[in-house]
Image (cartoon, rainbow, N blue to C red; front, side, top):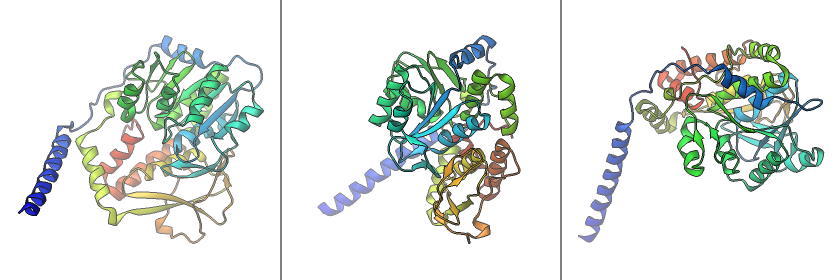
Length: 380
């Protein structure tokens, strides 16, 4: 009798949990609010450029920092690729320890130096520090290094959930900021003195700038290029990327947890027996921004993973000198298991083509899940 009571008691608990979970799902909105992004006053845009303007001598030094075991793909590669494409600064990819940086959700990179090596080479610090999202917001080496760089006068740019890392370092206390929509509550709970600013893709306060989700790296880097080298240079790079405008306009209400988002993620996760592994062939001189954003997008479907392959274990240098390490040594990867980075397209067009291809493969709901994670304000 006691065993039967125990079993039925367990069943009752499971059913209650499932009922509560189902109730939570049905409590979510059926869609996000379609609100036009409000305009950004010119004085606010001017203040952003003023906060980032470079007034030093020679070329500025920009450090992009990451932890070795898990740093966000686009935040690390796209920022570096855009800045190096502009060729207006010395851009250095850093890691906390020797060895490669494993990015998430895809790709593996050889950094240029460790933070210790950078400090030895640049005792006065960087002029700008890019802080990507990281799997651990409380890495002691990163936090101490950011605090030190800030004391030396560096402008700190927290991209996406990199804002949480900047907040954990105490550099957002009492400041205005934003972050990826999914991590906003967590950031504010950890750093309650932050004043969250809605409807802005990027927010500057003092020597710290923060952005919304992953694809905000593009307008943020273009704004930094404009602050360093002027509007014409930023316009030139924006054209190469396929970016029409790089202002701070953003509709925060368009991004959030919805019932279709959660149910699509659950459904895709449950089809664990029918997952795809897509291969991207690494080729010398390939566009690193397109590579990063395509690999990121395919890895966020909850139906597929991405691996890179090449003919040898050696790192493959992209168009702007980022060294990508292949996941596999394989020159016979099946053609029907490959995905393209659309090398003839500009990076933004490559992203749109990728999202269209994801729709063809997995349906519109999955594409919406990907775009929501990227916080990409798609117009089609």
